[in-house]
Image (tube, rainbow, N blue to C red; front, side):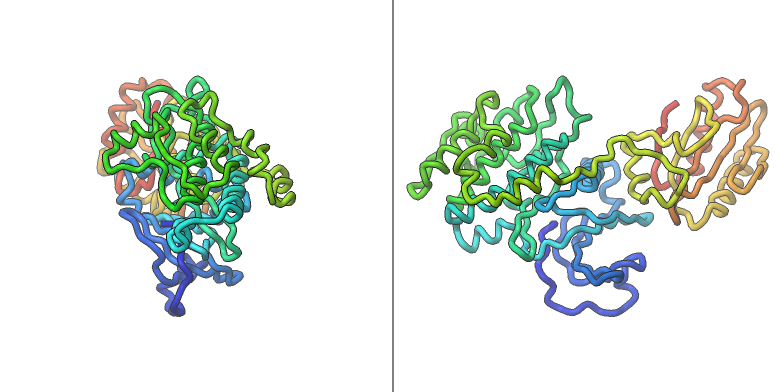
Amino acid sequence: MDSPAAPTAATTSSSSDVLLGKYRLGRLLGRGSFAKVYYARSLADGSDLAVKVIDKTKIINTTMEPRVINEVSVMRRLRHPNIIRIHEVMATKSKMYLILEYARGGELLSKISRRQRFTDPIARRYFQQLVLALEFCHRNGVTHRDLKPQNLLLDDQGNLKVSDFGLSALPEQLKDGLLHTACGTPAYTAPEVVGRKGYDGGKADAWSCGVILFVFLAGFLPFDDSNLAVMYQKIRRRDFQFPSWFSKSARWVIARLLDPNPETRLSIEALMEVGWFKKSLQSKDQNQNHQIQTMFDLQLTMSPDKGSMSAFDIISMSSGLDLSGLFEGRGKWAKRFTSMMESAERIAERVTEVGKKLGYTVERRKKSVIGLGKGRMGLLIEVLEVVPSLFMVQVRVGNGEVGVDLVELQWGELKVELEDMVFAWHNDAV
């Protein structure tokens, strides 16, 4: 999906091909069940890009929704020459657009297929770039968990780029210092990951590296069987054979990485000290790996400057981040949602219509605040424009003496009527 091939035809100059006034879309590069990837060109500087267009209606409330959120969150936080860069995320009511670095060389797997296998020096060069990227990820608390040649891309200079962080894990996902979600591609997944016990994500990535290095040098998988149960048995027993052309040093590295016991398995950090790995390693690569500054922003700082937050900063908050910092004077009870209606005034008009329909007394207190009154209960609805065409709406109690049970009862019917203007609900708990 993220492996673009070079465009073969000129793109049309039709305005319909221009995405939100910033990128001109070209040929389709790939498609999946919920997304399409296009070649694109920046109207600002003419640079080549790839745009992943995600149909939100196909991922909402599915297992793909958290994967997309996770992928973007991780890719925005990490900047490394061997990791596909995400430049920008934009959204409309029905679509999300991921503006990505354009990997002109496509999937590394295609190159393996053409050559059948790599020589030791070529395999080592790609492997070095993979390991440098992973060491950087691990140093910053990220484990990939779905490493395979299909997720390794090449730029126009032939440099490796790691992609697809949809199954990656962040530090906050650890429980007792371990990960517990079984995921990945079976042929590349460490044996402890498919068990029911916790596992070290870094050691699991190291196992995948061992499989990948074997594929680089052999052109086929060390563990492969159409029957998954049989394949898992082979993996647990480390039942594979080295081809005759493998060097002694490469065999040692692979054997240490494909150790079923994660306690004794070679780690990524230890691998980087092995002689075979360091051979011909350009010193600037290793030095650069330690000098790169991470872009982690684990604590999102809310700023009154609406231009300081992208649309996806708000969209991603639906997965659990607290938006309360966007509002002042908030009470204990509050509900929040984002809306992508055309204007704050239109949102206020819609709230007014809903309020009157449900029998509330409606009062426009100021441009961005609407008061709804019914009996002893009063609600204040405040509209805040976060970025152009993206608004945050907060509903809070205006009368603090009203019990929560009554508020929740009234909120239930109000929420149903507001649904058509909601982009995403946030912090929907008392």
